[in-house]
Image (tube, rainbow, N blue to C red; front, top):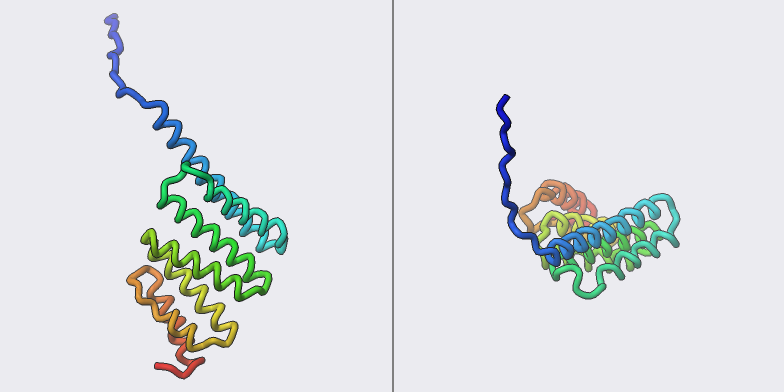
Length: 167
């Protein structure tokens, strides 16, 4: 029987502060995401008071000091605005839903999330169409972005063309 001695592996030194900060950032983003997800679920279940509280809690988590970097803060805020827009849309407060969707779109554009910008544009066009603002909806739905939602934007554009008589 030969006894083989296990080899000793050298691990790189770990900076405890950096690792702890990464964990805090990860859990912080998960907390914001959980609030946004629960807010959306509450909205779909027509529990509007709890939905708004959760969306506001997510927004307040985004505003806390220096835990997240600038890009992560903007991304999390954009998701919060989307959740609030859905809340206001479900409450039939179209103007507030439109304002929050535009804010989410602006933030997604700032950080380069073009697919989310396209989704926001579709939501804006749908709200504008429901408010009988067909020409405005048409202008929004003609997607200038080269994204995965361009085909859907084109289909919405055709619907808006029929409704407003453009194109």
